[in-house]
Amino acid sequence: MKNTSIIILLFTLFHFALVPSIHATEESQKKAAIIIDDFGGGIEGVQEFLEGDVQITVAVMPFTKNSIKHAEWAHNNGFEVILHLPMQPKRGKLSWLGPNPITKDLSAKEVKKRVSDAIESIPFAVGLNNHMGSLVVEDEDIVTAIVEEAKEHQLFIIDSATSPNSKFPEVAKELGVPLLKRDVFLDDVASVPHVKKQMMKLAKISEDTGVGIAIGHVGVSGEECSAGIFQSMDFFKKKNIKVVPVSDLISEQIKDYYTPLE
Image (tube, rainbow, N blue to C red; front, side, top):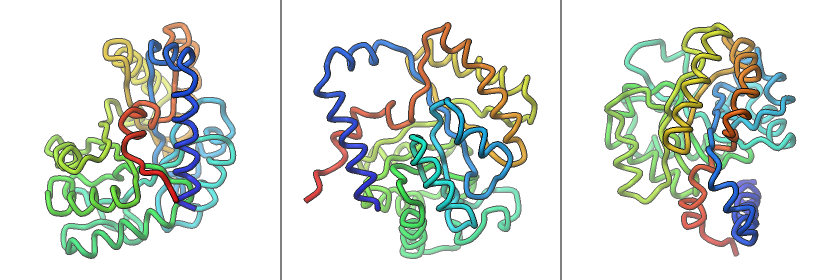
């Protein structure tokens, strides 16, 4: 199942390498990635996103009732899937994390086992990002175990940036794992006007730097988040900003990261 995901991603990358005129046009265009978290657990907004025409990246919680269903639904409708890995925050209940989260009390061996099990539980996942995790992302030993396991499964990492002291960037760089960091949270306030305001921030970052990454959610704020995103698409088109799968932003790193399959 993982091999199938890697083959699909490699095929896409080789396609662009073989069509330089198209590749050059896309490279000159500003790009934004919109990761939507909490699939597998959230309900509100799920159908709107997965039956919509905005090329979101679908982050799926492991070991939940709808994990496999949502991952397969997303993949079948042409959306990129990543693992949304639950990690212990500084505040909040551990029960919010669901089954088998990454917590401060775990050994490196147990962290690796939980990460591996989570990766294997989500079909078509090609990357991972953290669900919460403001506590454990500051622990270098735990983060190293996570990054090593991501490398073993050839997954890239998106740091959700829940802590300014996250060890993900330095550890990923040291181990040679492709990583990008979230720029904007879209629905920290659950209202359509706020989501649209945050989408304008994403557009500005994409214009200024060439790329930008935002994170929103299904679940409690899912309907407001989906509506705000969809209503912002005309503005993105006007600004010539293309919404792409998050792997597209690190395609150059990824094509050197994956090894050919036998």
